[in-house]
Image 1 (cartoon, one colour):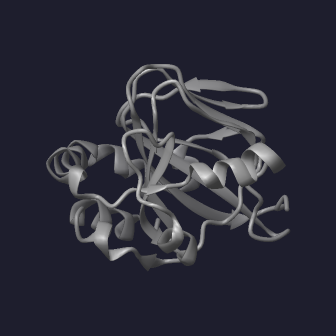
Image 2 (cartoon, rainbow, N blue to C red):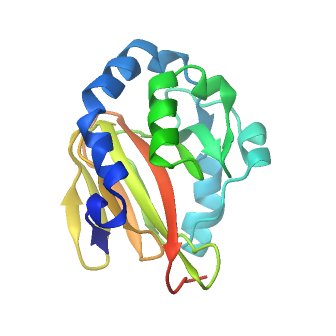
Length: 194
């Protein structure tokens, strides 16, 4: 189920307003980010179980470095409100914006290789009283589609999308180009799906 960012927080909506400044920093420094290969995670969880799992601190440290052949990679910024300093130091404007918005529970950049997808899955909520709202802000995308059970939306650069991630969903990069997006989570009171 898709939501409007302003329905969740006006601060999140403001992230689109500063996107040009964030993109400028991204263009200058993204090559310095530390990318981790999470293709194995996708095989172990999404493909075999149909659900995601929390990616914890040790998962980042144990994941192998990503290269050009990696289908799905993450450049972590925050996990459980803890900064991943190799990347937060690289992108200080992005980091400051996320702090201002209160979007530091989990945040990072995701990279999806052209012609690849994260198949149908759901991300369990933290508990039965909290819902996870997933935000995605594409920094470079062409032909990427985010689908839920009932809706499909083409992603557009600099346009924030959010949805209840405990709903069944998938992301398809239908282009030959790499798709990059800033992803962060928000938790709100509501019936959680475990």
